[in-house]
Length: 143
Image 1 (cartoon, rainbow, N blue to C red):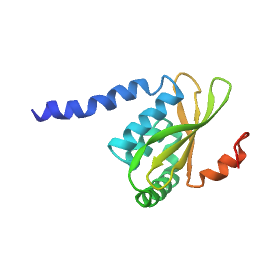
Image 2: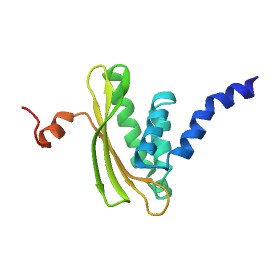
Image 3: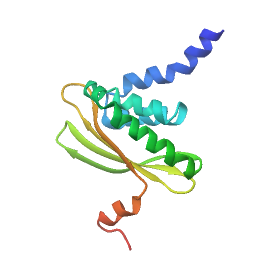
Image 4: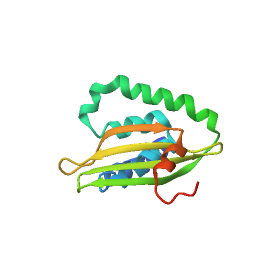
């Protein structure tokens, strides 16, 4: 019985792992599944595990986890995410920025993804709680 329950719990993660490489958006959707279901730290570990060269950046990754863990309890309950900005350079390099929706205010989390061969990998991740500054840079935004 325990094995069935554990298998049932991990099937979504297994399915997301295989779909994660089909597009940069699918990889980030998998990140948000982890974010919602098992927490910030596991989500960060998941996305950085896509790039074997990030193993050398443990201190940077731990700092991101620490800053997110400090910021999010102050924002209230999590309510999902929305694509905010997408910029693409060719077929292999993409910048995706998302709004993570919380009760108090959104935070912006941005990913730079690269596909050197057949799989997307994280190149950089950053987050910011000053979404208004990014809005000011966009054309046609009423002030």
